Each structure stands twice: as structure tokens, then as C-alpha cells.
Image (cartoon, rainbow, N blue to C red):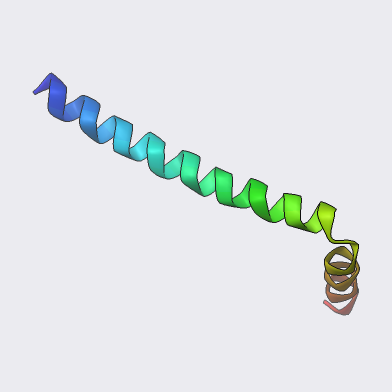
Length: 47
């Protein structure tokens, strides 16, 4: 019972960490690529 709860909690944490990791990677790409940042700013102005 405890094992199962731990396993589920671990799986949920893993999902959250993976999700946050992908967001951080996206941010990193924006910082490394000024063109991408300029495009994103243009999009924001259009909205």
C-alpha cells in the first residue's frame, strides 16, 4: 500500500519535473536565439 502510494507520487513528481524542464529549455532557446526573441516580441505587439 505504501509502496503503491510512493510509486504514484514519484510518477506525478517526475511528470511535473519533465514539464518544467521543457519550459526551461524553451526559455533557454529564446535567450540563446535573439531572432526568436524578436519574433516573439513582434507577435506580442500584434495581439
